[in-house]
Image 1 (cartoon, rainbow, N blue to C red):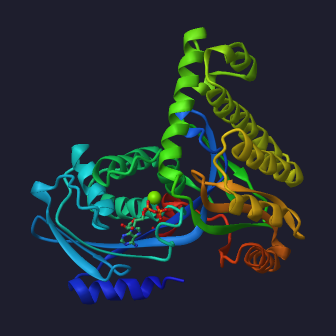
Image 2 (cartoon, helix red, strand yellow):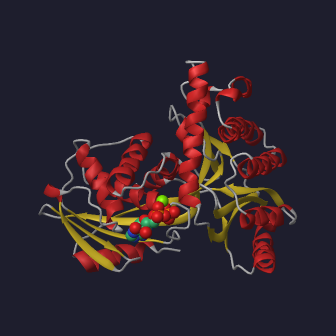
Length: 388
Ligand code: ADP
Ligand code: MG
């Protein structure tokens, strides 16, 4: 737990000025993997880890940032802010200040303290969490209001163009716009979104396989290439199909001879995954968690067999989860080739489930996994509304 009063007094002591505090959560994707960059559907939720940003104004034109995680303070001149290649933690926060400037919003000098309990680099999006917390903080200093989707777009720009990380819109979007006890269905083309009931008697358990196979980066690029080639073949067959999102399985079968076997399988994953996200929505709105869980298992099989982006350790985590009491659904989450699984578990069983999963995974692989029992929490906008 991060103590807000301690954060505020630490900021006061460091900068001799009273600050205002903003908080942003972390996120996990429940279903909808590799669907974002072809305009499809994703269904993430915000989870109860957070980054807090305390901000106060300065009279000069400097930005002074302190990260409690890195125990380091850095300073910038706001008049000469520009992307660089240093790969420093401050890129994520300063990227937001830069993106605001790019939008024509003059950012005044500020002191900013950040602290977070989101595990860094674990796939729970500490990067989007710090961006959104900083964005909320900086917006409080200027006379401009941005909508939730605008904040997400701005923070993504900070990450893509300033921190040089080519992520999609999902992370920043859900971290900004999520609501407690809800999953968020996002249409990645229109940015329309829907908040869906998750049920209060379920918990989200995230298990980290602790492996990241070194093929990941090359394979990720190959997958995108295969998807784009399949999408191009579909577009050539039918110009109405602008993005894979517009195609169905009949279209894909009709274009099969125009693409490689690999492209066919990757596209089949994405087309069926988009359908699964929509089916998952109807399962949630009708309160049918069993059906929701079955859709998660099917989504995992598709990532494993058609997208071929799982790995033996992650498959093991899903199989072990499936056999444990209280497990409703389990699947790989994130880009693939390692990383985490997301599990929907009956609330009463969640702690035991987490312990047993950790134990059984260790017995099977010799790897000590990080397993987190989480709940779906408010995004940064709802938090700011509540503290106002
Ligand atoms: P993930 O988003 O999966 O956690 P990334 O590599 O995308 O992993 O982002 C992690 C990076 O974000 C960190 O290495 C650091 O540069 C930055 N970051 C995240 N949280 C903080 C924080 N509280 N303080 C400073 N930098 C942070
Ligand atoms: Mg990240």
